[in-house]
Length: 129
Image (cartoon, rainbow, N blue to C red; front, side):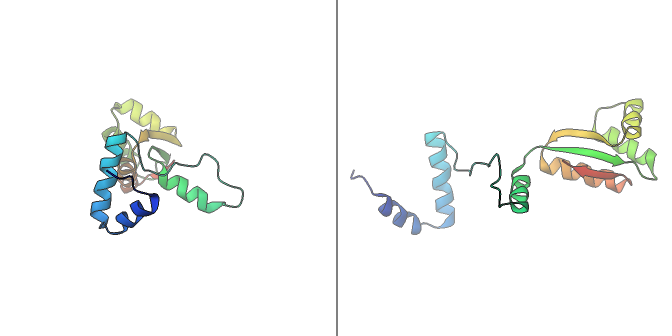
């Protein structure tokens, strides 16, 4: 088999549909045990400012759900904290009383947003970090 140049490879990729290209990337990653994901920058360049922070937050895959305040429906918030965690009644009450306090740590984005919505629905003030 003749060795293809970079230009010839790029021309071949231009002819593929997005689905075919996606399948190729997956096969390439599996074959060579690599990932084609862009590396996340550790430090943003001086001029990047807010845009770099937004990108870094989008790349984040682990979140902490922090209870800032219980609000007026403290009992409902305690019930939701118990449902989200494996804490007993006393431990959940102590966590709510000690706000601001992390309810969940190191969870994925979907679980963090679901927990936030649940706690806010009970009347709590919640932030994701």
